[in-house]
Amino acid sequence: MSDDVIHRLSTEGVDPLSLAGVNDGNLVELAKRLGVRVSLRG
Image 1 (cartoon, rainbow, N blue to C red):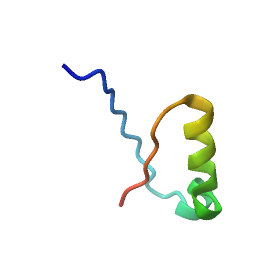
Image 2: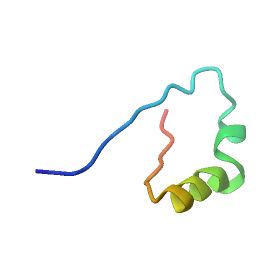
Image 3: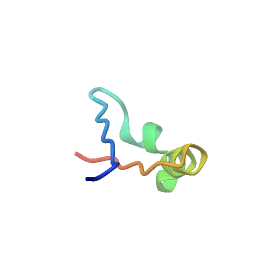
Image 4: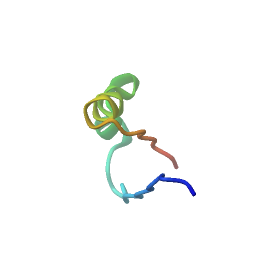
């Protein structure tokens, strides 16, 4: 059995560059600080 937990958040209406940051810097920082894997799709 897998211990993976998946949470999907709606980003409708949000500017993808503002959310992810330059070169996905905001997502990378979230992943490092929280110890999670973050991906932006769509």
